[in-house]
Length: 595
View 1 (cartoon, rainbow, N blue to C red):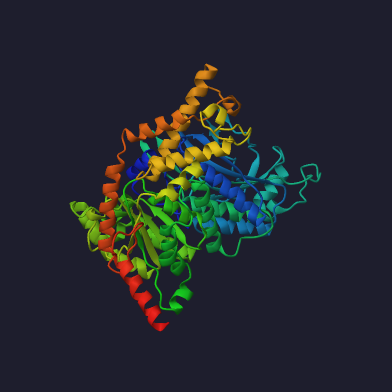
View 2 (view 1 turned 90 degrees about the vertical axis):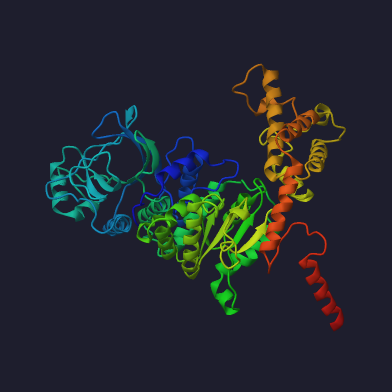
């Protein structure tokens, strides 16, 4: 493991502020430190939940995780965030202490930081949070394992602290501890009056930084998330008496997959068995995830490019794949960051070097995800053209390392024809407008029948102006109607209709209660969706969305994909005598002749 090198801070700042929360891939824990942005709680919550689940899975000791604002040692008015991971335990063996040192070596390198010298015990540096001091004793002795520290430990220091509490005035015990490290883990220790301590008390703590906005702009002083989590899980296992897990590569994969699943939550809106998903699994995921099987039949995994207009669910397809467990590391990388890295001298490429390091660490196939390729790789832009040429030169090396790509674009015509060849960015897959079944599936997912706790009916026929016998029937009638009226709507625009209808319902509750705050689920009693809500919602979306223009763009992109895929074509709705239908007739004739 290594401390994270700074990469494209301005681009990260842009991503932090501009990422679309409605269709958003999580910042990958193998590539980014933890974000301390207070407006972004998804990443932090995923981090905490993943730690809890993975520690439970290995039967480890659960840590206490806090984010604190630490007062600078040098400037009392300067505060900066730290993640603080604390383990409080009663016993620590010599073997466990050595194992903790091994973990610190894995994180920070061998023999890092300072150890207590003879007659010199460090005072635990208090983390001073904004407005209060965290409770901590100052009569402790222990080991600091972190980045090199040339003076006394301060609140700014990041690293691993392994400490044992001492009674404040117990000079004898403190002296013996300085002389003999075995005392540190000896459970039978007496005080100055030769009385046996009832039990030792240990504090194992890790402090690290991350990405945050400081007085001088974006600050990035943290390790990769995955490395912090791997250290936490190793420590939790050691303190539970289970030692360091043997298969660190497998553990890293499990952490990565769990972080992706938790970060994505339940955001997918597409059927899990859609044609595009099945095709990606067949030509990329399954061959890549099973190299021995694939090589035995001389097969090869193919990269893929998803082409379609904005809002047709390209990111949602990728989300669905990332939630599945294929044994493959799927790494979303900012295409702009990736292009900027390609334009550097090869010795200065931090992202690409990190990518190769990951391939060695995880010992698994990797899929790099690059969205909106037309932005940084525009063939008509000088810098984009240079980035395209650099990528062409790099692809052979990536593929030989077992790395494949999933890319997306709204404008494939802006990309270099050389890049779009099937041997480069792979098979181009068309993501078109949803058909009737897909539109109904999207509505079914996002339109509940009733509220989750009190089960207040949201489609009460008596209140909605619908002639139906039940709430379920009223809901089905509205979903059927909206499905019929949304031909040539993108999945995103369909979701906007649901959002508008829900906003109108909430507004009606606010008017009824006479206040616009502190309303709860119970306040929905006596209210439900009306037909007018859905009519108004569709009209609001239509005020800035043109189904005819969307259909024309869909047809244009579909023709581009058909032209690009000379060997394998993929379209949602074939028109006329396509290559596919000609092939089907030829094979049918062969079957008939054999019969």
